[in-house]
Image 1 (cartoon, rainbow, N blue to C red):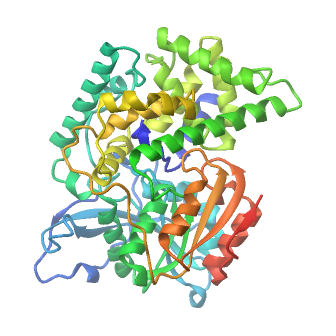
Image 2 (cartoon, rainbow, N blue to C red):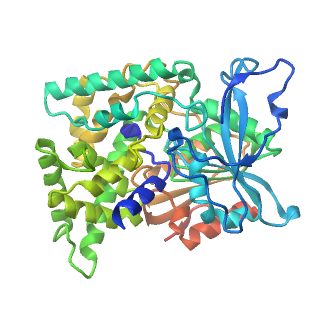
Image 3 (cartoon, rainbow, N blue to C red):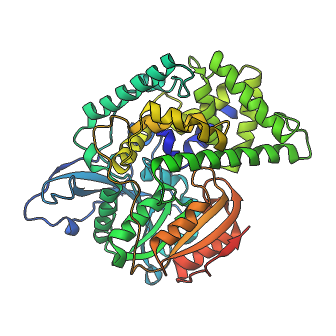
Length: 516
């Protein structure tokens, strides 16, 4: 899975597409010495089909009004400390504003998170959800460096990844611990072998500098921005580096910028446990019988028993692979990202209790970036590379073992899974930058920060801490009392009215606004 110690889903597109099936030129180069990259002209053309690293599939369909999505490549320095050296190509996508020209504000740049999610494939998948914003903005997104078409980080091949994701990620004895450590070392060594040139240059600070170049190339005085999940961390780092260049910005599904990788993993254990509790309560509260338990406690007890049984003996999944304990845990976690997927979780559990692991494995595949053809996007490789380049701490097996009791207290179901995933950056070939990102942004204009009380991946408390870290007069917090990862795409009218009022008309909602 994409670095499970930092489970921050970019989007849920892959899940929806794969489940519906089951259940129903970017390049680098050298910069010419006399050319200023801020003056480059983008050559916008019809978008090609997504690359394998972007997840594959068909070229984006036209917008509802018939307009076509356009794609281009922006060149940026490979090493921002050597801006006149080699360059890399960053893949961009846009939908031009649909409203009157004299009402256009500029470009609205999206980052949907991950880290490691392809914005070039995600934006058109959700484009109609942002139709109102498109009336005054060109909608723009991109594959950050190391992601998708933007000089993607490459580690294991598809066959090797199938094997990698079949491993036991919650070891019970020394032999299993040794195997987990060995597999992590092999994964990291493959990343270094295949992507040594890009690995030192995929930090969030690099991506933030890319966005400021993008702002200038797009012709905007200010960066108008919509960041989701990890995209809020990227937005916060941008605001820290370029406070005077921040335009209207929204942070949704907010990463806590004050936490280390360990604290983030522990917080997510609590967050996913809360989401599981909410799923169980919702299931048994319906008028019809809950098919996976008679009470909320019974639902969770049966899930725990299923995982224990799978640890001993996997069941058939998506042929020829089996549903293991690890795959089932990942599938459950993926379904908890959105209340819309709870019905799939219920169906997957029902089938698994009867010995059929297909639905839970499809959910797990979506989390890991695997499509129906057995091809993987590079979200796992990019996720690990970006997190390990950002995060300074390195944890060893003895340290993790000492932390297991606390993680198990936070979540009997997800605790071991998230604790052991802290090994992802052990022996990573690039040193981590810091314990946590600096997002202090004195002098920046108001940034709308939206926290969801039921968010499993970026727990609600992170929104308040982001507001505090941004500094006095910058962060404006809005609370959504809901479920799932993020708030805007919940379609809650109160949340969307607040976002639209701010991004379209500059009306900053009152701090402490609550939507339910």
